[in-house]
Image (cartoon, rainbow, N blue to C red; front, side, top):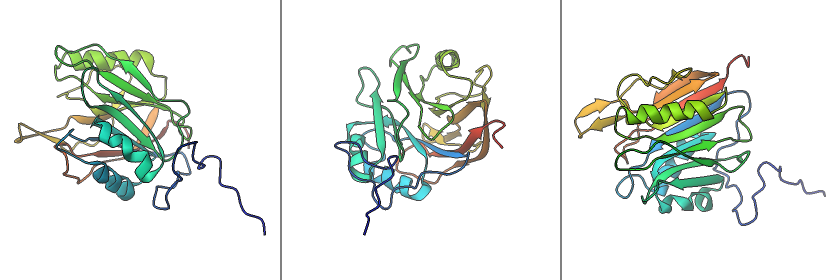
Length: 233
């Protein structure tokens, strides 16, 4: 009796654990589901909380902000592909996880620096996607965070999405990109004022669904969007 060989797409790389049975199945069709979540480092969401979110939402790509070294255990706990880019001088940074391989290792792109914290964006290309994704945790300054977005306008391709914690109130002023993320609040400023600072901007893409998710392990609620390239259908 012949034994079927595993698909090269799902075969683990050297040193990587095999894909567990409960890991999301790679998507078929033009849409890709992306979830973004600020974990609130040290006192917020744990790797187990992240795994629960993956099992519940089954994203094609999960973006995380304020991810610490503890989150590096994710591929060993659930399989998949993972990368993290710490913010310079900080214990946390931006991270991404996917059930399918990246087309190339995610890039850490330096952004204009704020007065206190230097910022980087993670630029991701998944093999199963037809577009690039930038994972951001922007500065609090309302002029600086818009400068950081304009930097991404310059480096991202014509089909791209920017998701994450924007720390931004009001319009993004990001030329050629549209704000398609959910409109519900995602965070409570000083634990009282509900604001929408976790966002999704797109260029050359269509958003078919946008939701704020009910997870409370962090001070931010995750957002989930379904994206596809314009004119695909």
